[in-house]
Length: 198
Image 1 (cartoon, rainbow, N blue to C red):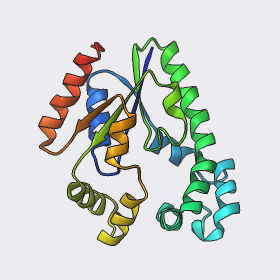
Image 2 (cartoon, rainbow, N blue to C red):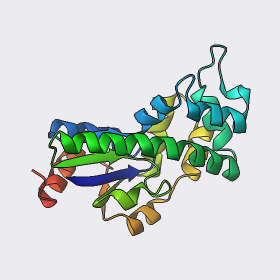
Image 3 (spheres, one colour):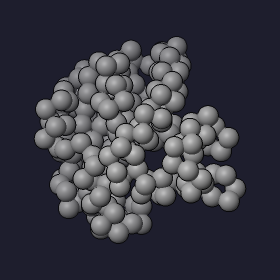
Image 4 (cartoon, helix red, strand yellow):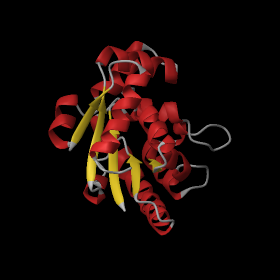
């Protein structure tokens, strides 16, 4: 089974890419979704996050306040490193379990959407890597609309992420999402043909 590592900066269009891969019949793993699952109330991962970041990241019911955690983590390099260090181990364990399930189910390929593909070391488990990139202004607009945050906070998130130049250097393939959604989906379909994954 071929493992495709999907990454890219926030707001570039990874969600649309995943939806397209799913529509084409591929198994997909959404690491953001897994990150939510491993940080649910009572989880070992959440306990470790509270130990480092403090109780302010919890609401009155003991659930993770994701925006508060994001604001804390993205405000400081060491805090961001701590967040990644704590969460990556739990996420990777769940990803590997899901990959094995898809392998047993007989899928010929699986797409793993991992925003921190290289930072987590997950790229080493992939047969090929694909990055989704888009213009900065478009990404900022999408992030503000999607997450309901200010331009300043959106820019803070982008500034802490891997650069487009670096993604182009380290990834096997880059797809640029600067046009319409239809054009972008065609690019994904063409990528599937290029990779002989149909």
